[in-house]
Image: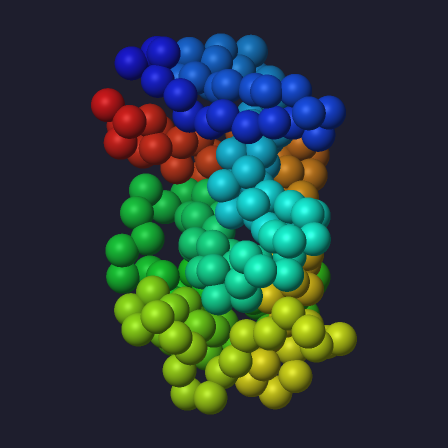
Length: 196
């Protein structure tokens, strides 16, 4: 169990990193907030945001797709909010996660109070129907994050990356016995349990 990988990513310097259950438990034993905050940031960033940061022209022109970007970003929203809330599962709480996320993130203030709309019409639309619903659209070409019911996936991802960075900063600044850390540890216990 201790050798099970929790994350594999390349850090900001390009170094390949592998974090196992043993590594995480070592960080816990040492109260190493910075190592855990870095691990969680990179685990989520590498899975949900980094694939869309690839800058090759052919990829950007022919492969990068706003729908797949938004699908990935919606997964990140629910995951990140589950960490913040200390939820072992988000079953029957997904809409709540979206409402809380958009209400509490200054980087996405244009979408404040639109958590339910984005949950129903983008997240659920893409996940269950393979399309947005109720007139919502996804673009990569607008100069605005949101215009009416049109969201720019590129700008949304950039703002979401800032939200993820804010979470890392919050963890680094919070006391070890704070609610933020208690909730993270609760979520991580469930993640590790699922690995077994």
